[in-house]
Length: 147
Image 1 (cartoon, rainbow, N blue to C red):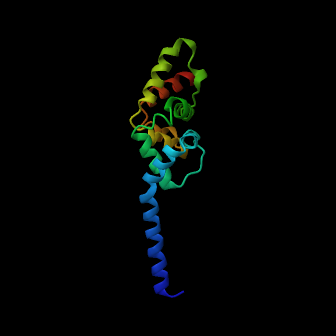
Image 2: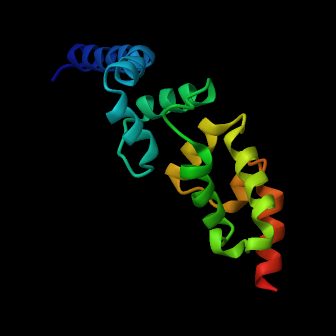
């Protein structure tokens, strides 16, 4: 292959990547509206493989109010709690009100898309505590449960 062909292929590959990325908002919205059940299942299954550009756009969509596709306290909170070595059983019946408050905070999270990507990516608690509004409570509970 000569240098001119190599340059042309590199340019075409970059153009293809940019066109693919630029089409993501429309692709995600199309799937979201035309295949809503499938889209909801994809978003709620944190192990669903996704192209990075598609994943980024889903996260943006969640940040803009994807409540019908994802209930954070059901999908993300258990995963986040696991990062802090906690699960639902660590909160006894006497803490039901407190646990409900944590769920409410989770469902109103302003960075749900970031959390969703972090849970999909297997981020550790050290990273998550930088953005999770429940991190301090989870950290405190984790220390109390351990000691």
